[in-house]
Length: 153
Image 1: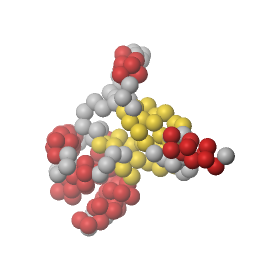
Image 2: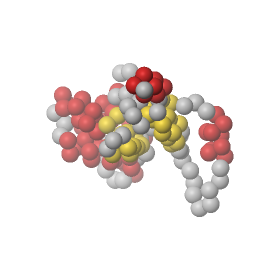
Image 3: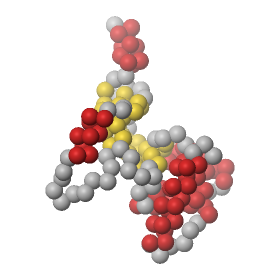
């Protein structure tokens, strides 16, 4: 498996969550989690459904598993506007902070590494709120789309 450490951490977190809820571990749910950990991040439900189809896992089971993963704080759901609303998912297995630039023309996503912004958000104190992690999205046009626009003019 490409990212065995991520899967192992997510599996342990899921097991703890399921036990705390009084549930039982599920082989099918673990298969969905394994496939989610193999997909590039962020991924869509359709991408997960496509890879799980080989295992003959139903669409309803996949969506139920995604909701469980979100509740267990294993997966983070992101709703972005790219011409139409689309929910994308990211596997998180700890405190992960996300800074990303998103092109509004082509949908290209690039991760940002900005320690000053991360530090600013992490050090901020909010009354009556305990922050676990954060995501920051910067929307605009990527270099490739800007070049295409200049060539058209």
